[in-house]
Length: 448
Image 1 (cartoon, rainbow, N blue to C red):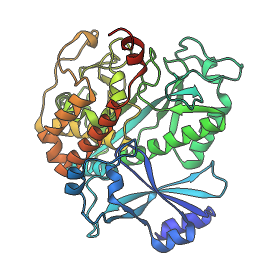
Image 2: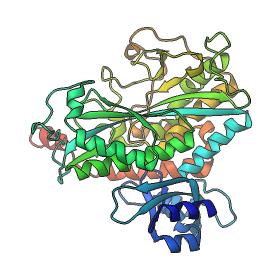
Image 3: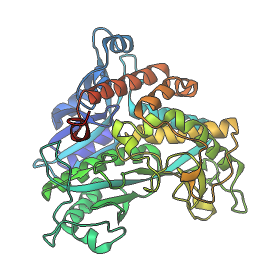
C-alpha cells in the first residue's frame, strides 16, 4: 500500500476505480475518493457479483446458495500495486486499480477469474517453468446503433465514406480512422499497455492489435484494460468498437489469438526448443495436452452462444485442434521463429473471452500435456478444415456439458469454479432462448 500511495500522490490522483473482473469479463467495483481508498486499503464487494450473468441476471437459487454463504457476505478485495492504470478519458485524475479477492480467512475466492489464472501459473512455478504469452485482439469498428434488432454497419472514415468490401491488411483503410487510433495509442502508452502492431483484418472495418509478449497475469490485465480503452477511444470519435466474436453476418469473426511458450526459470531458456533449435519433447507434449483437453475447456475460450458462430470452415477460424507449421487453418499454429522464440499460437479463443480465463485454460491444457507426456497427432500439412479428428463441441450447450463432465477441469480449477461458471453460462443461454430472432420471423412467420 505504501508504494501504491506514493504512486497515487505523485500522479495527483483524486479518484480511484476499484475493480475486479466477473466471469464474463465485465469490470465491476466501486469508485472511491483517493483518501477513502487509502484509508480503507481496498474494498468489499458481495461475492455474488461473480455469479451474475452478462444480462444482469443470477444463477438458479440451488446453485447460488450452494456456492455462496447464505448471508450473502462480502469478499475482501485487496489492490494489486502492479495493476494500476491512469485513465486518460476522465475529467478528474483517476486511476483504475485491479483487485484480488479473498474470503474473511484470507483464502482466494475460487470463482475469481484472476485467481484462476494465478492458480494455473502456480502450477508452472512448481515445476520451475515460467509461461510467456502474447495476445492478439481482433475487433470491429461500427456505426453507432441503439436498436439491437438493426444489423451493424461500417463507420464513416475520414473520407466521408464507409468502407466497402474487405480490405485485408490495407494501410489506407486503417488510415481512415487515424485520429481514433492516434488517441488509442496515446492512451495505451499513458496507461503502460505494451501494444505493438495495428493491422486491418479481413472483415469490413475489422482491426487487430498485437501485444508484446510477457507475463500472463500482466497481459490478462492489459487485455481487459485495452478493451475498455478501445471502446472509450471509439466513442470519443463517434463510432463503436466491439469485441463480440461474430458481430456481423457474412463477415469473419473476431479472435483473441494467444501465442504461448514456456521458459526454464533457472536458465531463461525456452523449453520448447532443444539445443539445436528443433522442437523439444516438452513442446510436443504441450501441443498434445492442448489437443486432448481444449475440447473440455472450450467454454473458457468460447464463452457465449455467439462465440460458436465464429467456428466455420474457410473463414480463417478453426473448427478443430489440429496443429501445423504456419498453417492458419489449424486451431494450433506453430509460427515461423528461431529457437529462442519457439511458440504455439492458440487460434481458438474468441475476442469475447475473459482474458484471465482464456489464458488460464490455454496454459493449463499445455501444462497437463507436459505433465502427462501426451503425444500430439502428426502435424497437418494441408487444409485442416477437411480433417475430422479432434473435433470441437459445436454449440455452447454441448461445450458446457462437456466441461461439466471434465475430471481435469474439476481437478485443477475446483468444483466451485466449474459449477459456478457452468451455472452462469446456462442462465445466459436460457435468457438467449427467450428471444425470437429476425431469422425466425423472416422464414417461419408465414411459411410454416
